[in-house]
Length: 570
Image (cartoon, rainbow, N blue to C red; front, side, top):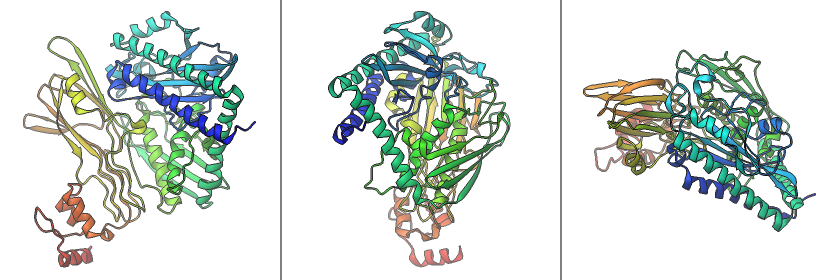
């Protein structure tokens, strides 16, 4: 049955509204800082087969729950975080996924899932910091799918066990209750829809949404690429112990399907392993699919959901690689590996599209600080900082793009009010965008003054080389972290745990810029001058990278004769 097109459009908007309402509710009631202040959580609706109905998926999906509990009851809620639970998902120990089956007229019709990155679920380091982990047991309590609520009543035994393993049990308990309560709200909203429009209309709408997305990808977006293959090679620089760890991605268009063939080095001792078998491959595809939307006309509005998965075929390497690790290989920094795969796909897609999509980017990194104040109180601050996006044929890359899922970017006022830290400087990182006819977007920097003694942990890539630029352009500037203590100003590892700091120390972090596009000598000198006036590019880089000679401040007028001669020498 196909839904009435008007009803289908109304219901599609209503489904998105349910997700957004649940997210807004959680944003008001979370207690843990990473959830309340940094927004590291997501909400998604799935149909009864586990297919995402919108493009807002950062959870593992309900497949592990469906396999473990094939006949759920109304009012059940299931909890899991084990990245190896078959079919393997893409979670990590610090992330709790709570999944509620949704019923209408006694029949299962959907699942609502809330993923939350909690402050502490045990493990070797506070806050789920995984740098230095050697096996999954170091990263926190591993939970296969278990029932945490039956008939809307919480199973307290499960909750008690979790709280006993957390350094911040008082926060975790309230936040589990918040997830359970928000799931009840989402279930009530879906029941309202079934009463208003009928169960058959709602399930028909699910099918229509998936089919519409599939047709858009297979009929409009993928046919814009030639029927050829493109390969991009990259590497995770280090797992905290050694490196690099090689990765390769080959993108091939065959008719109306994109084939993504992955190669990877042996599984790592450190926590960069990224399980992609089973549900994980679907999760990866959900992250790759939106990148094809750059091929659409600006006036188009392609729906995004799991219908796009039918337009992709992902082939994984054999077992025992960083993409197919064997349990209990640690996985807590799998975001670094995931980020490299996204960047490699972007590089291959850039070549395949003839430069119509953005160039290189790297936008997955976290930074943690923890310690005790003079009264013995424990403090944990975790930041997820954005970076610059790659340039594209039509224009410069965007600057200060939020991390994946729009998490992070905690307001300074909130940070300074709640944590023993002072942010003394922040802004766009000058000269971080790759030089080109189109400039890469700028990364960001923050400089923290530490008000207690403590320890920091960093999990970031692109510290040795920044995101690649297009033909003739420069790469973006790499990630950098430095600690200043008195007169000492020393670099800190991009992937490192337990880097001690003292009260009064300053820590400065700069994130990568995006790669440029095209020959920098073809950039309009007036555009370069505008970048200098706005502080995006320094006068020195204007001349060395772009061949544009400027006069002094405040006007920085272009010296046309000197610029022409300078560019002729390049």
